Amino acid sequence: MILLCELRKGTDRTEGFPFDLPGIRSLDTLRFQAPVTFLVGANASGKSTLLEALALATNRVVVGGTDLKRDASLEAIRPLAKALRLTWNKRTARGFFLRAEDFFNFARRNRELTSELQGFADKHADDARARGYLLGQKRQIEERYGDLNAASHGEGFLRVFASRLVPHGLYLLDEPEAALSPHSQLAFLLQLRAAVEQGSQFLIATHSPLLTAYPGAEILEFNANGLEPVAYDDVEGVGLYRHFLRQPRQYLDPLFRERAGLKIRW
Image 1 (tube, one colour):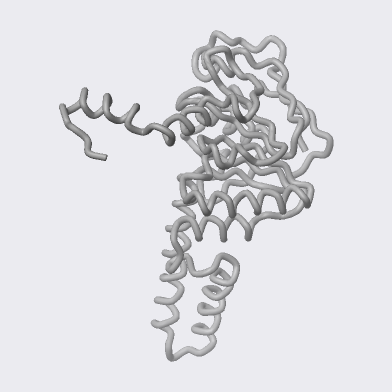
Image 2 (image 1 turned 90 degrees about the horizontal axis):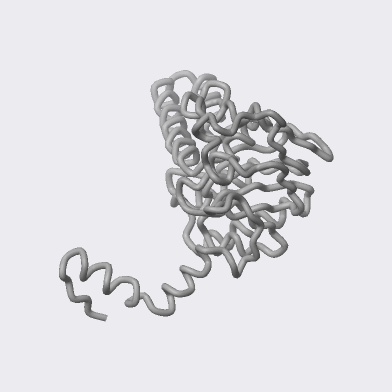
């Protein structure tokens, strides 16, 4: 697993994006001290950027997306990936990189593939051998991932995620909560715990206060000062959720009144 992530000496931090992001500009040595590490912070703070650079540097397999070597959307991130020096206690090729949008692409393609296999099988109704082969391929997909046509996004995500976990893997996840309800996020945490017990490591960029509550996790926050370890109760998003749930009108009344002169009934 990864123990250290360092920016190589001599790296030009004045090159512009992504080196101009506070969390990247201040990066020297980043220690991963727990099996589960969360990267938190506002949008455009750099958490997904660092995760993508780590995915490139560790050559992760992508679930449902374009191969990292051919992904044009990562061109601006490649200089950062090349500037990272990683220290492992045990290097592993197991594991994957999963972004929220990649899962939706995977689920859509999975549905299309099973439908295509069924259609081809129907066209070969008179050829028992061909029909049997096509339906066998469809059955293998459904046995591994379940019937994603009949599953919600949350159910599908949990099935796909669980089916691809292997022991001693390194998993990089970018906002996995996008497909998950609060109850599904709790189920996801159980999957994390089971994988950690099998020797896996997770680096997760998230906005979810439910996920970041995982016991024993390390939380690294991207803020104006750079990248800092924080306790759960000190995460900015956690405090905001708490305050909002206690007094939603304190936030919404002024916001809506200012926007449209609306009076809200509670």
